[in-house]
Image (tube, rainbow, N blue to C red; front, side, top):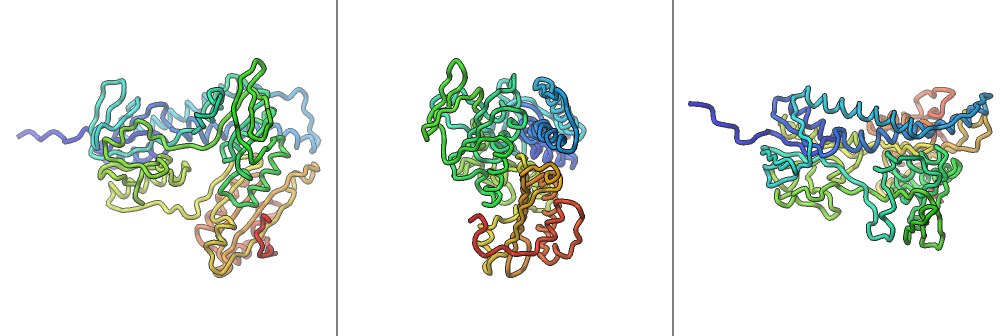
Length: 464
């Protein structure tokens, strides 16, 4: 008697080939399952194609101008130094294509079938590839479609504005740009364009940039980016954008009019769930419009899971990858796991950059019943002291007054993203301030301040 045909085309069908979707697909295929992944754009997702990676290349390119200024203080001189935007764009695009190719090749090596096209759910087990007359069935489905930029479509003249996605492909470098937003994407692009010589204005409707970060970090960074040439306007937002013969006139609520060549809206990102067919498959959204999942990433449909930015839990690439690993262990290894979102380090590649892990001072004061001890230092790093620069580094430790555990570390200054990765190990491990103090300093470095902070700040909130 011939063997019966399999009930489904695939054991797992993944929608979205970003960092999370690719990791889940590869692990599952390497485990012997039949897996396909569909991608409507390019393999690599937000991080590789239109996020972290190209943005970091832009940051590094734009930091050169500051490095040249510092170098002159050390006796170097540069004649006719200039930046060529088309040359940079071409080199960046070549590298992004190479990285995307590596992601695609790794899927193939693992035995994953890559389907090019937009996948939508027809029911809980069926996926259609739009415009290609293709339909596939799968025992289990994983949604990893990420997020997309949001901008206020009702704002008059919004059609003249771009988002971060278009910023990676501007045909020419503008002379003037206005960036609307106060989150990490807005702050990062402000540093990028200012560093490339663009007259840069940042407007944000809130009282200070980087909402959700420690208040000392927010205040310190706002001052430091202004030293780098970014004009910061707070407590303000657009009324309209008017296109004229000479540029785009930004009409602001405070009565200001600012003419620029480009207007970039970096006012947040939303889960990419539009027209995905979720309702037909029984997948529900939460009140914020993200896919509703349990701690193990299962949706309201028994055979469908979701990971990464589309769930709007903690929108970081490494987190999506860890969620993918937990999904694989839970579903295919009979080893239920869920990611621990406590003490996850993150960096803002502003100029200067920010590195943070753990609780802000305000969060710690709410959660530590015995109060907190706060240690703060602001200093001019050795490199800048030599040149007479007024730029300052901020370092801050937040300590549970009862257990003496270091529950928060906040750094603003050169190399802070590199420092915070190592500090995160100590915070995650629950080390105490005494254990930090017992660690011998490496001299002369900026990081040594983290283990030499001795004087507590007064019990008043540090931001004043």
